[in-house]
Length: 254
Image 1 (tube, rainbow, N blue to C red):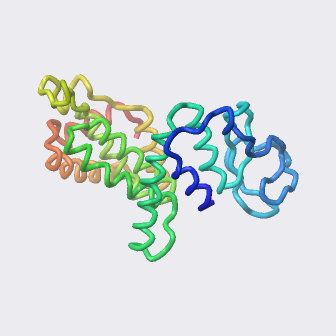
Image 2: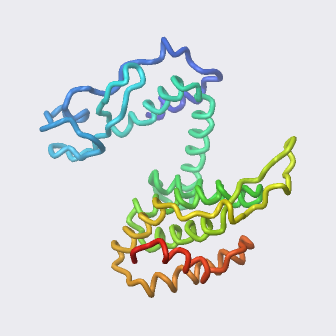
């Protein structure tokens, strides 16, 4: 795996697609690790009952076939898609950032960091950059991604706090900075009523996290107002936490 990453990072230009769209993965319903036959072709990530390794399901860009791959083949599939989509340089840039962050965390944590550890660390570093640039839509999206990763990692309390903060930002109407000739313009305010929303997807994530925690509505209200007031002061948001809560409650079945 290390040799593969080293090889792709050493390339200065995009490989020729016709020479690089190699076969990868299996289209048969067999485990890519131990070759045991599966009862059916998985629709998504699953664990082999024989060897207990996780099997991943992807689409192969060479022929658009659904394939089963091992965990250490995932980066290769990503690379092939980047070549096909013309985003190879961006792929290399992100992989370098990822690997650099992995090494930093290995030293900091004194262990091998998980993929979620690395993604969370990278996203946390993006937040102040988006804040400084006035890109509040991107800031909001990064926090949403953080919340989903925390939920995936079963850190439900932390995930709920992030989801509630995302909803508060949404109710304030976040905008990305408008730039004219590279310079920020005041024509578009950082937050506006016209951009305010209650996204069904965010509400859904809040609801299922509440169920995981078995929390009552009063405790959710208290947490929403508490974390929102802190965020309001930090980001200088126009809408108060209590006003935001009332707007949210009118759209939810809690």
